[in-house]
Image 1 (cartoon, rainbow, N blue to C red):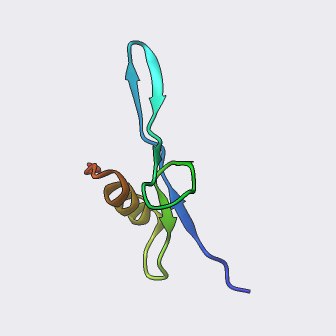
Image 2: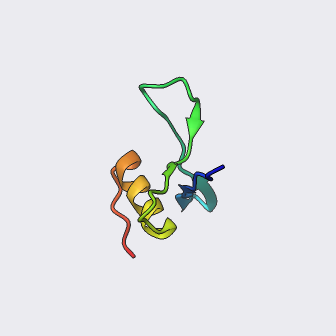
Length: 64
């Protein structure tokens, strides 16, 4: 059995002294509340995969 690698990232900020975590609800699915995540391609490392998923799903550019 082949395993499927997944990558996910938590985006946080501090506002009014409280830590907040970015979550979203995808408009095209009924998956519920999510964090940026996705499948890691065979030729891809997990770091680059999570950066790509964050950019694709939030529009944020991650500075590394």
